[in-house]
Amino acid sequence: MAGRPPIYDKEYHPKDVVARMSKGHLDCQIYAAWGISKKTFYKWQHEHPEFKEAYEIGLPKCEAKWLEKGIDYMENDKDKPFRYWIAVQNNKFG
Image (cartoon, rainbow, N blue to C red; front, top):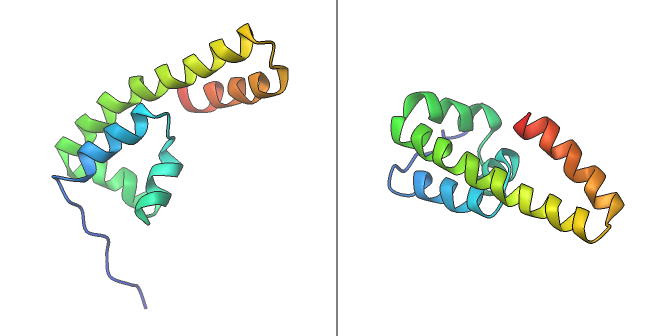
């Protein structure tokens, strides 16, 4: 038997997704924190224009945060985290 469906809050979720992405949180970290599935997270983007817009605002903020990390790794000769950073860049941001 399926549980109760997650409740979308148009006052909370759009603001929170931008806030979390501004800190560099990836999609999986956000929907895990909210206790929803990946499918629900992307479904909300299709069903709620304000959530889609918030996600699109958050995406470059998230990318910028990750770029800051990469610059730090390069400037401070941190090879292992730099390789991890490259993998995230390729998988999340292309």
